[in-house]
Length: 371
Image (cartoon, rainbow, N blue to C red; front, side):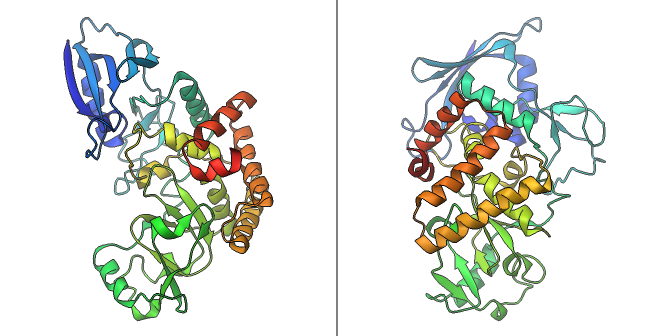
């Protein structure tokens, strides 16, 4: 039997798949003690105590998950952690290695190229068994490849390095110029951004900025704030620029971007991000692009998307008028969106209330809606 103090990151991250596969072939994980963030307060990645043994005769043992020191939160029977798989066929048209995107499915073969898949072997230690059932239901009901690079090729992070350095020379402390400059932490929240600074975008060569001709700033876009584990998004047609803590997603249909705005801001997706792709308790980790692209997005008929898009329009307009005050009409529309998606995922009434309480306790935006 062996006992190690190790970072949590290897349990879930996609770039540790091969390591997990090789490790689990040789070892039985017996106990994991989640130490949280209080013991090593300056650490950027929370750690666990991992107890394992060398595997003998291919015999699988149960894994017990504890909140340190002895609160049992979940049990994985027979080392079965995850049934989700990904395609690794180099010829698969949906794979994009530059963006770290590989098609996910529960099938043994890729649903696009029909070649063998490999197991992800994600080990989630944050969810209880109840939460895990909700997460798995969401993954199976929705499309984990909806935001694939082929259908949504235009998605970039905001300016960094030379582009950002040059941008800052032109930014003014007013909103009189042609393009707004947004600070992710201060200016962007659900369905809204605050205008504080601006600059004239034509003063900067498009060769310096990301994209080819200012398209990520001039075109209608979905702004996705990703400097924490849950996304905060807003659709806008205004010229806006931002730092690398923000993604800009483009699409030919504004209604598609509005639909995604409502979906990513919805309670189920916030719940999924909090528990399904994040083992950290308190330490903040960023949503990277492959995480966003693999969120479980419902694939709906256009008329259903338009229902969400209309609600998103109303929410954005009402928040702008009220200076981000969550008045009753806004709360009602937000609840409509949340219920729409929870119904899609076939969440039972008792679990709906459970999800509202769990996320309301963690995210102030939802606390104002449901608490």
